[in-house]
Image (cartoon, rainbow, N blue to C red; front, side, top):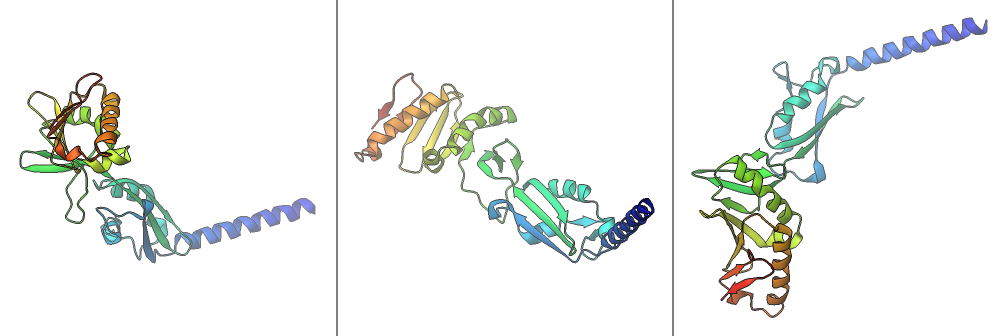
Length: 235
């Protein structure tokens, strides 16, 4: 009798599970909800993300949960050049939730008559009418190889609170040496080639700590940090 009762109980539980699962899959997607990583929406709005949620040539709202392919929807959303990561999931109440992490630009590349952003992984991000990023402007860089080489320096700048606010432009000269423009004054920084980057940044910040303290920074026209163990300031 115990085995018979256990068998009946398991069968009943299996029936309830199958019934509830069937009812759940037949539920209709009533609404969508979009949440941005760190609550920061740069290029996209919730409305723009909702417009990406298309399946069978129709919006996912009013479609049954059983026909929604979350994997394909995620892939579809990730095709947007502004989105770095996307996670979609459905809740019992019929809500399709989207967690979106947008690409965060770290520089804007100017080539000829066009321009584009790049993020920390050197992925190209198109210019947007909805958002203008406050990032260094890069000129003189002609190909992806030069952009890739510059990434080491750019990530160093982004990772430093002071330099991230101070450096507003980087130009690759014909000599293949880099020059920087700054926010604090009408002078340039001769960085040189992309060698000894950490050492050059350390020298620059040491120089800044002195000239900012005595307010003589505005007397300089050029600050040259490309030479070993020295900073050459031209007034």
